[in-house]
Image (tube, rainbow, N blue to C red):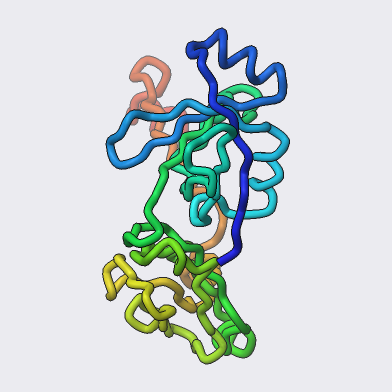
Length: 231
């Protein structure tokens, strides 16, 4: 297991004003929790934390938090519990750590990585659907895998890989439903052709039938009058 070290210092002040001063001086306020004991308020270098964020997936790696003047000189193994961001600037403004025991199992989410190219995609024109991007597992902190590798080469059109189909490293137990689908090769979507016109129909608008005008009895000559004129 790679050791990721983060230096920290104890902090006395609390509240928004103190946290603002810390951030302006290049530090981030943090809290360390451990099995219901009193939380420990510390501060870490903002640049050091950002470096770790860019290099690792912090939600599933152990950070050895070395606190200056701490009784635990070897450091405190921790997992990141929560990272808080500024809602406007999206900068990190606070971090919560969970101190853990290296001899007790924990639950973490591990990302899924695919290997190869599916036959159903390469030769049959299907598309690979990623239904699960990470899997929750239980293991010792020292056994947390960086990712779960899944070989998709043999997948044909309509095939799927379930949790139960994946081989996990020794000591790593999946907690998701074993019947859950992780990956699936779906058939390409068919384009619907426009409906054909029915034989005999034209694209013209229906003709409007106008009502016959009634002839006024005053304007129209009587039948008898017509006969006299024709004589």
